[in-house]
Length: 242
Image (cartoon, rainbow, N blue to C red; front, side, top):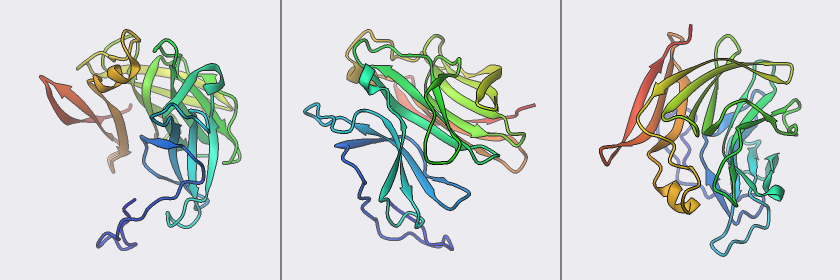
């Protein structure tokens, strides 16, 4: 882990993160989140060892730091569907205006290489998460962003149609209510369709890992990695929500 000094002038020496549980390895596909109560959350997932060892399931978790990333001695269980053979990986977590946490994950079925509709969970206390419920999205590697009006923008790779898609929803009480969707980039299909070994399909993916930040204008700056004409690059988008 690399950290900048508080004044942003330079970087500290690398720090080794000691996880509070055995992985034996971990999947990192999310930036650290700074919560309003001062905690830092680092969404990740436990991952199998090369020998298939899974001492702590294949589940979505969040490492917790209370000292601005100096140490990470705690973790939260976010979503565990591995007892029925479903991986919960490439998750996304955001903090809602009312301080609740909203989470989604890619639900990958180990036995078939297919996918379940994207689930979501909610944490009212910032520590425990609800049972998963369906978002109505059929996606992989979904990432969330809270808009200025409190609605949620999701960017995701669909399993049923090519390209990167945007979906806007609102959370009413604990209900996920879809409002609208839009194709952002039609560069490639998902590629993860269960027609070959999962590891090889993962290697052969053509795009993914969308990320978003708000600009001063209110527009959203988004980017992803993609492969076009056998060249891998970073593609960016400016999204205006009206």
